[in-house]
Length: 336
Image (cartoon, rainbow, N blue to C red; front, side, top):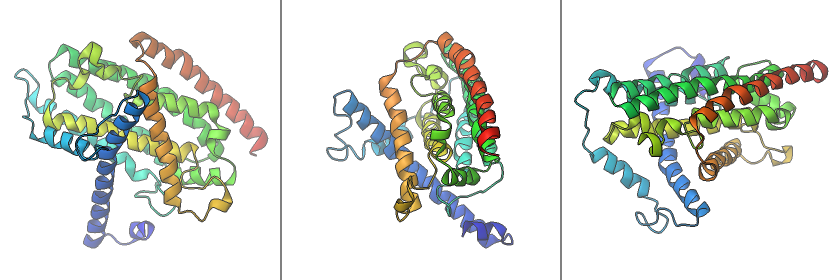
């Protein structure tokens, strides 16, 4: 259906169909954010031998996140007197919008994808980098030394870990010969999942993606113990909610991209399991990656800033370059 609409003559009907589908995806992502936060808090509670949210919405706390969102929306929206007002207001929008835009190229199944473009992987990497501009703008516009430090840390961290993140997927591009995410999934159906063919690339990608998400142990831009929340320290109410929304939408997007690149996307692990719907396989793999990222947050302590930078440039980058070199040799020998 999506492909037929894409190649048909543009019309008002097509516009409303695409607009409706985009709204439906946004609502689905917001649902994930709502209950993804709850799941994260419950999993963290279980791993730390405590209950987690269990008051609002019954013993499972199913309405806790909903109550938190309502509280944020009802909070007073304050703007510091000495802040750069236009930039302060615009920064949360710049941070959030790319997080939703990158979802357009994610193939959730072979039949459900919004934009099947030839350079889908390049599009994801390019668009996701714009969020850093919003974070730096928020740090600068707040006119607060802690927010400025958080913004500078975010810029340094994103630049440092964007490089190994891109390098880690070049091995996949070499083996597939394409930047199209559908081609990458189909290639894994013909050979093997890239987590098997590219284990080093997967580890680099996983570490770099956690850093790109600003999640523990790489959450230095918003370190509470050092920067009292960092780049968004002066934000409150729904503007602060935009930053949190961007973070969890990127969690959704990065988990989906990891599923596509390394776990075969919607494909079953064995052919005889092909009777199970493609969407179920994607959801199971996606849930595993999300759980892995939550597990990291509970397990690892925050890195020191100098260790963070050294690890990115002196460890991840050389290993990623070595992985590209080895992959090129393997492709020349076995994938002619």
